[in-house]
Length: 145
Image (cartoon, rainbow, N blue to C red):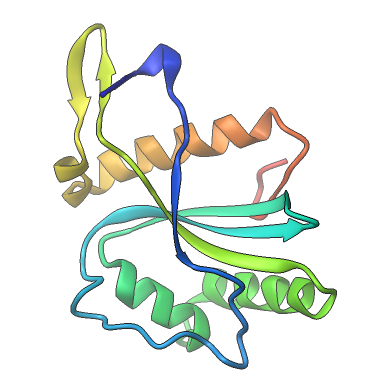
């Protein structure tokens, strides 16, 4: 369990070197749970860009980046940006936050079980975004510099 003052980011890679033409097949029933995820763009093994998101169903979210619906503007935008980066030779990974909980004032604030609650996911998603804002990494989330 991490205290908010010492919040650290650890990612578990779900899919390495994703190619949108040869998108990985997934079992949407095995990956049916809420989480914080990221698309990570690497050049020479160095993280260059990142998109951070939250979802109630990681399998469905991953699927919809390959096949975005009409109203899924963010999925379309991220797919287009990642496809362009892929064509430029960047390596793209799809990752999930390795999270064991967060404490505030020495009490449990949010556990991974708490990811069923969208507000909890949004808190952690925004903490992760804040972490990357202070680094020389392009953040692909809209409106974040």
